Image (cartoon, rainbow, N blue to C red):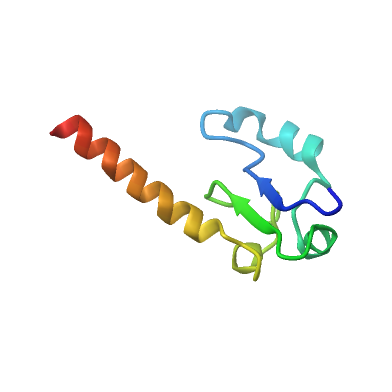
Length: 91
């Protein structure tokens, strides 16, 4: 992870896998993207997340607002891609 240009994470339990939540929380404990982890990345590294975030699991509260986070821009870009798909399918 040292000097990574991009740090990317996702939720520990995806939709549809809720029955495995407790098992996944135990398995992934300690695999959290937080401020100290971002300090190990390259200067100017980007933090990305698929959203929605589960604060207290894969990220601590406030991580999406971290100065290096592009998670909101990432979500915004996905919005436009999804709108284009809908326009294509409905046109």
